[in-house]
Amino acid sequence: QKEVEQNSGPLSVPEGAIASLNCTYSDRVSQSFFWYRQYSGKSPELIMSIYSNGDKEDGRFTAQLNKASQYVSLLIRDSQPSDSATYLCAVTGGGNKLTFGTGTQLKVEL
Amino acid sequence: EAGVTQFPSHSVIEKGQTVTLRCDPISGHDNLYWYRRVMGKEIKFLLHFVKESKQDESGMPNNRFLAERTGGTYSTLKVQPAELEDSGVYFCASSLQTGVTEAFFGQGTRLTVV
Image 1 (cartoon, each protein chain N blue to C red):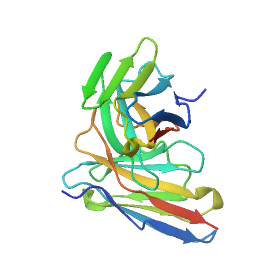
Image 2 (image 1 turned 90 degrees about the vertical axis):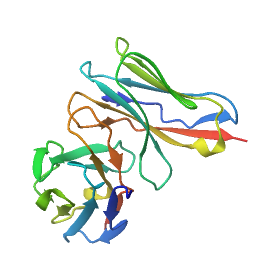
Image 3 (image 1 turned 60 degrees about the horizontal axis):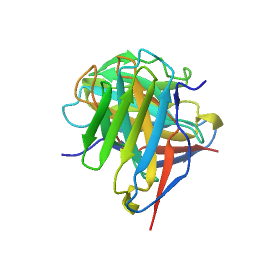
Image 4 (image 1 turned 135 degrees about the horizontal axis):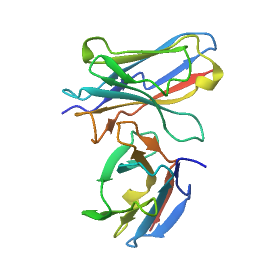
């Protein structure tokens, strides 16, 4: 079992719709959770961090964390073509080492 | 403010040769990390510096890999001798503080060993 699991996609959504990206993790001591966005050939860009159960909203992005279910998600409202990218879920277990999933490719279609 | 910068962006070398990758972290960031993504796999941790000291090198694959951070500023990652399986994208990241904090990544060095 992988430590951090994501559906590789591609996940296709129409422009203006809500994109829902999901991630599960296996280590119950995981404490910090991050979503990175990566365009092809570019660096991973941090877009959201979440540390406690519940929802955290930043603009069109909402991160949701459920530690009991070992589940973290990212919602993107009013999806735009510029949101098309690979979204990487990453977790830490109290230290600084990030453990990544393989990423979900999102395609926002006109 | 400049982000994390890495040199070179691409490198193609023959098996058995040596390659040195460089990372310049964000100014003032004491924490510097190296990660690697091989084709089809997830990004994996290699090691973590706090200033010039190696805090965690549990992800280094073998003794062909040597990372240094002299003076606690930029870092180098040397692969000697390179093998075919070393091909991938090597990312550097930096963060301001040790502990629960956010890391910022460079654009990566794509290494191809032929």
